[in-house]
Image (cartoon, rainbow, N blue to C red; front, side):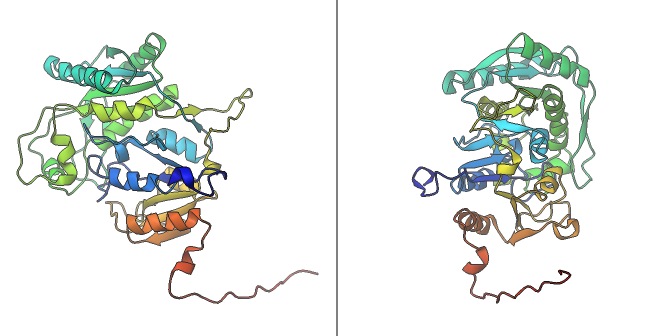
Length: 366
């Protein structure tokens, strides 16, 4: 479809798909369960920009040539127009392992990295182990959004600096040891398809820190011990139960994640460079419109499409924020809006009732 479109010679039709991290989204709040949405949406546009938790499915992934894997902090900077995105053919991915990971579990992750390199041909650098335990701590699970802390951020940054300088890493995958909370009610709810992903908030802290400091793509995979089998496991949470590691999906995503462009006096734009002004539409859950990226995009030319069916634990609709949004019930309806929007069709003309246009009056002119 994309290769034979009559409008292919026009500027690339660009869509941003956002599902906020760690807020209990009914679609996209679990292990890669928004991947079907992203796959379908990629067929309606020339370029789809989204973030890791939409595409990460632990050992499951689905790379699309026109889908750009952009970490959340970098996506916020892109939305504000401060950073651009430069598509790449490949990245050399560096791997940082938390010293707090047990030896056997560390070996599982190294073997997963070797498997990705051997079977998919992804470029990986040598790995590095942090000089101290990262000390990840999670919230108590009784809030509307997940959050966490990292006890030794300096250790993470030192490891990143070495793997960039000595290993030549162009993107960084981090595996940190997360607390095992096998008996927590929040984890049980999550495994049964309810509640909030308790890992997401701390994961965002880790990737944000590296992207903000070094301006290169980054994503995180938690190291956890396997959970006991649960016959009532939700299909949306099942991807996280397949093995000992969540690492494969982030290595695949980072392998061709776009590099960030920070404008300098010597910067010369290339035709393939992507900037926020080139975004045509942004799709977001209808009650999660308070994020930095959405607020930034609402002040640009992009159309905001708010999906009511994707409910989250936060209640921030577009109207109180003064955001003009096209409200739809489902992602299926959002796909139809994108097709019409790309074709230059007024979506309102596809409904059975049309309102008459009114004549504007001129006042205050001499």
